[in-house]
Length: 156
Image 1 (cartoon, rainbow, N blue to C red):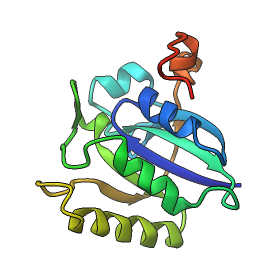
Image 2: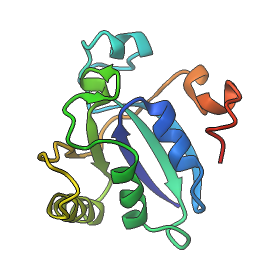
Image 3: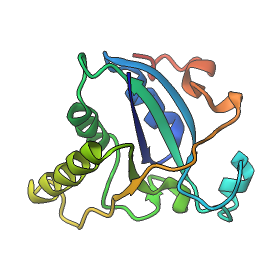
């Protein structure tokens, strides 16, 4: 199994999108990229921690590739929107790819460049590409949130 970590707005919807994919074995939501130890949801919302809301997933690379995961990442949010996705505002909602090895870094940077050159986006892509760091798991109530609230339109 391999690991991938993405931030693309509120982690509930991002997790739901990746959970549907064949080859994604598990997902969790949490926080990465900040400077605060073991932040809570309220800490992150208060914008004092510097963290992004992220989904971290384990995937079987013999079934789905990192490149395919990147394609989904670009499709599920607006990578030209700085610190905002829809009505959600703040640095915790930033567009970010946290790579776990040099191969992922190269693929993420190439994918970002291809996306920018595609002509799909009128504005500059603001997605950050950063080395993964400490990952802080969000509380249980946030894990697989849409499944817990039984929203059939979200289920795969």
